[in-house]
Length: 449
Image (cartoon, rainbow, N blue to C red; front, side, top):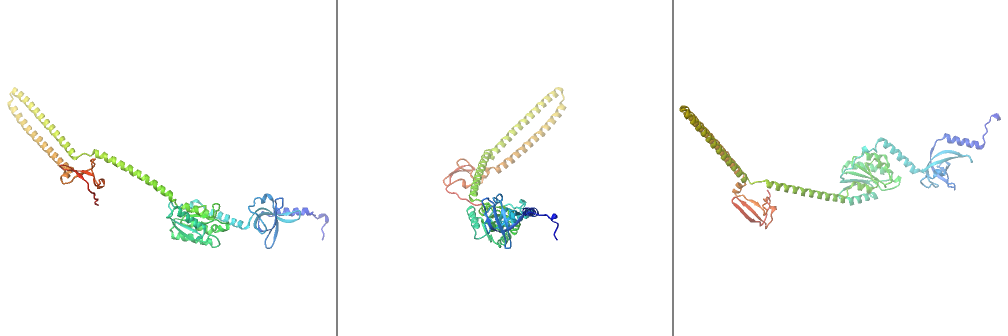
């Protein structure tokens, strides 16, 4: 049944194509499409025209010059690519097409997306946080190397360690470093190293390569094995510009395997120079201490006096005290006698003979008591003096000399205490109790005590 011609909405071809184009561009969001390039064309305008296809279908595409200038590779027929695009319609021919805004190689792009997704996941879990990273030991004596046993990386590591510090121990845990089985072997090697617990640090890595070659070090199982390691792990994957998930989760990232070996090994020459510096400081400190002790010895030697001199001084002091005491007693007695005579004369003048006689008896009695006290005090002082002299005589070196010992001095009168202070042919002085001997040294013998 035909509708009324006046009610029909009639489109021109241009209007139809424009409507379809607007519908496609507004209803479909930005798309990611993967396919193989065919019919690739690059006209003088700088725009690219191509067909993306798979084994069942194909679609025409256009990538304008302002967008294709940012592509980092050279596309060609047969290249598998991943494109970000929007759907549209070329109105002039009424052909459906994709307008490409970004293009990357499909294999690389897929791996890169996996890399970014895993990086975001592990970042959210905190595996990359610095608070979880173990510090490397100050002194590394045993290094574990997890890499291919035949690759260039292990040769570089061994060469650097041998050059810098040959005494460092090395344990190699050989694994595959690319391919499907590599990640599993790397995880097992890390577990084996931790089980033996002999290594101070682990180097996990390989030489350079493509993203696909380095991919085992972007596997989640490898990242979690490195995170769980109780031994500090240094990641050394590829070249300086290469970054893997293992680099982010490791306790330390080295730009190359050789750099990892340098980070873990001390420089032998630097260590020898440091030891030489310590030796110089030690010698200077010992020399200073010896000089201080020599000065202290000289000071004490000057203060040291012969016990006999001290005894003589004490004896002289006692003699002076005795003389002063006798003078004081004599003076006191004379004063009392003078006073007594004065009193007697006065009494006689007063004819008090009985009282005088009684006072004379009292004075005589007091005089006797005083003389006995003075005599007792003198006796006590003499006894104390005798005891002090005996004690000093006991500790006197002269007493020791009297028992057959001698004091040996060199020509500068320095007392000798060891045979190391003289040599055969020297002359020394030997002090005895009654004189001094000049002795010639013919030989020295060291006797262990």
